[in-house]
Amino acid sequence: MSIEKELELLKYQVYLLKKMVVNEEHPFFMYALDHNLDEKQVKMICKVLNVFSHRLTDDTDQNSNEYHQHVSEEDKQLYENFSILPEDLIKDEKPSIKEFELLKEKIFSDSINSKYLLLSLKRQHIQPKVCEFLLEELEASLD
Image (cartoon, rainbow, N blue to C red; front, side, top):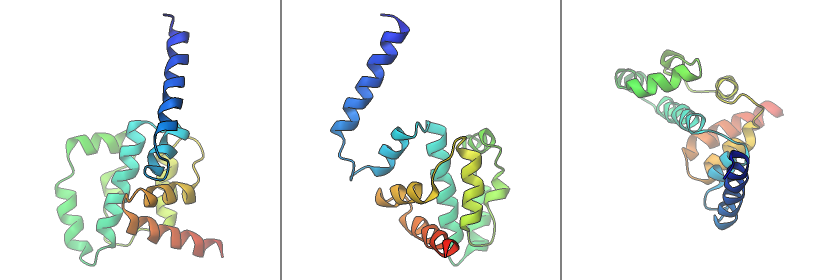
């Protein structure tokens, strides 16, 4: 089978799989499929939200020190793929929608809508408190 035929078959199989998956149960995965996000992009946005979650807790100074000490080599490599330094993420201040937007631009080469990205993550229960915090900031910035 030629490469073109294999690619066409693969695209059709993905289409069928998307039809089988209940969209409401996995909205972020559907978002990732619809926007052609790769594995590194998905991992990185989840890492960003994880770090933001640590920064939203009350004991940010202690959390950031512990987190910074435990950044794995794999995570460092992931950060490097997007020209993000761990030090840029690990701060003793609450995250902001502005910071999220800047990181989002580094992670995704094309335009990704922050609101819909955060809503899909929240609905799939991926750091929902962080997503809600950022969505509230986003709404406030639009007023």
